[in-house]
Image 1 (tube, rainbow, N blue to C red):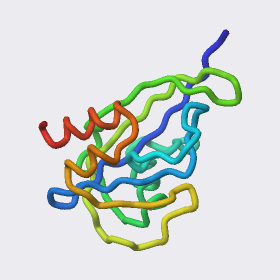
Image 2: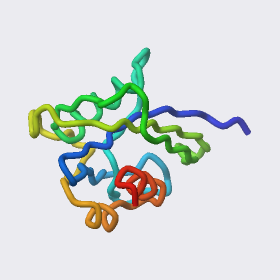
Image 3: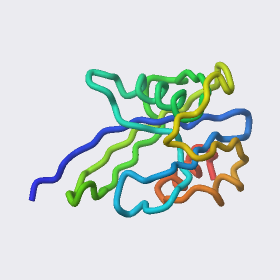
Image 4: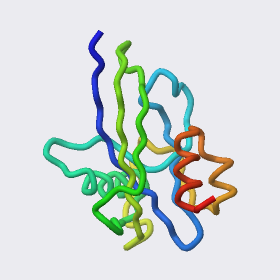
Length: 141
């Protein structure tokens, strides 16, 4: 059985000692049957650089206009999802970002809620263990 691949990018958006999270309405795998908390992220469009995709996805999902602090990701997440009955190897690159303008646009309809929270609250909210590891790394905990 051939495995598909999927590439995505997202933002770890810090505002002082707080981090921006999104509650997604639906997951991208059969394992996510309910809404879940994580970082704003999404698929790369044709020919798009990962850092540009990350900036675009943060704006689309949160309404926050951001810029990446560096062109190099601060974290990479790899996991397997099941999509339409097929296994897909997913790689997500996360970039550290700073806010240019908060609430520039309305969040898109993929997101149920956004939150700007401290480390402890984020640790409680985040659904997936891989995302919790990234949070601990970013906050050096």
